[in-house]
Image (cartoon, rainbow, N blue to C red; front, top):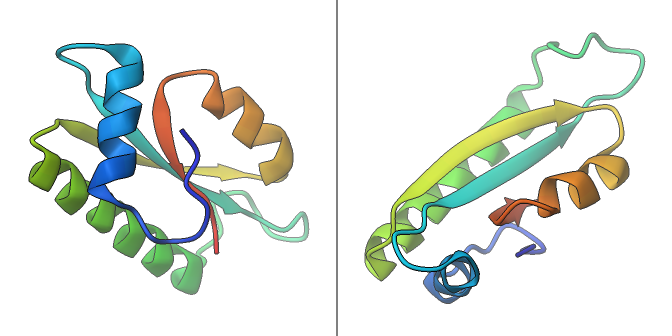
Length: 97
């Protein structure tokens, strides 16, 4: 279930969990689009801080909803191509701002 922006709500996480059923674990994925002129593992402190903040919001929202959540950051060159592929698995997408 995609979430646009950086606002992660317990309601959205609960809906994502319902899609996959009981004992679900919600995956919260933050995508960092890395410009082609930088190495894929380049330090991007502003984007990395945004990712940590958004994923912490996802963790807190999941805790309030009583749901387990896994968080991860994905670095890619083209977020537009990555989002549809990532959305095929049950997850909460926390896109870049």
